[in-house]
Length: 204
Length: 359
Image (cartoon, rainbow over the protein chains, first blue to last red):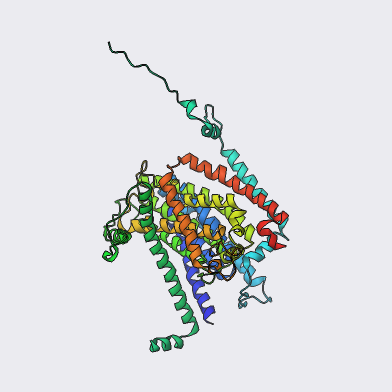
């Protein structure tokens, strides 16, 4: 009973923080603050996943999105000289589109939760998973047996994307100087330095 | 005493658990903070001796006649806490003041999953290694925000360097940890230690030596220590991300997280590669021998050895050039770890080393 109550309290608290942070992403005046609100949103959704006992997904969300993607995002946002006023002009103009997308998403979630499960027992009071159960282990077991091929395919798609991104952004310019690290390491003092014996001036 | 005991027994079970947990958390945190304090002293002393100087030798603890300079970290802390906190005129005030906290919280909360001894770990969770990776990757936010919120070009440059460097070395570090979890078959740090049972040659370092080197050097780079400390780069960008910070914010932004992360990297290197709390003589001495028992003291000695390396590097190596740092991270370490993972696959197939017991 106390555990259930605690879970509910935590869920509503972090849910409220998540909603506030998501609003912050849209409404923040400063792009860096908006990006930080997005970080907070990712973090709180990771906490919600932890509450659902999906600890692997929760931690990976923090590791990948907060730890790597958003760092680079912040990096870019900080470097760009963004005209904030220009950025905010579109807010009112495109508000209806955002509301439409949000409405469709809410409708989809409601459809899945209420209508597709109509008549089916909804796992509202699912018993807590046994202590020995490891979310990470079972996910790995499924991923590397039943879904091995799709998993490998996804990895290959990512690799292709990386190679494509690099080849698209690499520019070959004339006169571009390369460093030959091996040659730099192999250099000896005799290659660069010549000791010259200079005869002393004779006293006149 | 009797009334206290009666009060304790009268509490509901969950309250007792909460109190015990709180006391344990406090013990670990105070332990880490004290370790940080004495690490700063140790750093100054050891580097001093390497430079043939004395290091701090004036402030005595309670006026004790021996080991002068022992109270130097406390004197420094009190000085820093009493100094004025200057907020630059056009700084983003909220973010400027919150950045040190963002740096501090991950540095301390990662300690929750560190196994200190066979029967003491705060949270024995299954995804422990992932938790460590996730939280250590959060530490960079403190530095980036400090650099941006200061509204100073030097601080901004430091933050940019730090972001690029930490993202680069995190990948190499993650791949090194993949090798560890292939060897131990678990993400749980206690299980990783248990998988190394059997004396110094059964520890992971023997089979994963390149990964251990990559992990430790990446750890040095992640904590922005010399020779990778271009983030501070006092010779070119005066102090990097913390130029504008003073007093208590400086202490919590710079000193505490950096040194806590150093100790963390040293502890994790000991746990993952050299057997954590296991004894090196286990299996070579009779099982009843006191030197063959697993204990916190073994972990402590291993951590001290790694920490000494941190200080030794700082006293020895000149600072890397920035493009060389990037080259080392992306072009040397990542291919090396990938190669060694393939080698490990071969070892697992041949059932040698840590994979022999899986049969």
